[in-house]
Image (cartoon, rainbow, N blue to C red; front, side):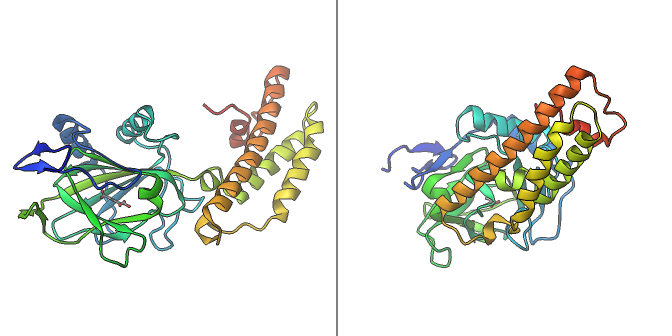
Length: 308
Ligand SMILES: O=C(O)CCC(=O)C(=O)O
């Protein structure tokens, strides 16, 4: 008998594939939580442009170009998504709170092609299963080859993919109406899954155009506001520096290895943090001196406020 067997319906649960970074958490949520969540999800609008219906929250995924564009921020996750995202951080499955959620609906006969999640997403991917059970295939290396192993995803379970399971292995769900489970053909019913991921800082922390627009507003404000003139030149210098850099559109268009991407992400993040610090210093002076900002663009005042 395989280790870690437990009863699951008429089947004995088998140990998940031994792929480093793959964690399978059966009964992650209760049946009651499951039913309430599905009910809320079914009350939201579905997108119908793909072969399966989806809902997207946090950031819109660009299915044509396989990436996320900096302008495609949709807003914070809804409370029911955020609750799961927070739990994943609390339980240390994620170091940063997931800020992107895709709800996929699979009616029997639908699936998702073998793929590895793109680099616009962070190092961990989580998927919560509602509704039907289904078999997920795992591909070592290329998803063009046959899957090497599979895992039965049960309703209420959570699948976490990080490390090798995220970067070296692909996963997918065959578009069919039933699965062979321990030699028994089991029909699928409707399945709904919630995939939670983080969007990498390079995309999340504003496009370069947005940063420049923001800094230009700050530059104008400082130039014309008594007490803030000294900030004008450092801001202008930063704008000139950003302007000199070409901006490749998305992280997936770089031909860089993982380490180079990490270095670039961390450099851009540091630059951005410096800008935030500059803006916050200006904000501190504005508040300390009681400088009037209401006559200015309302969004500008927001940039000078600490983030929560
Ligand atoms: O439905 C699932 O559990 C997986 C979905 C998935 O792989 C994806 O959204 O990229």
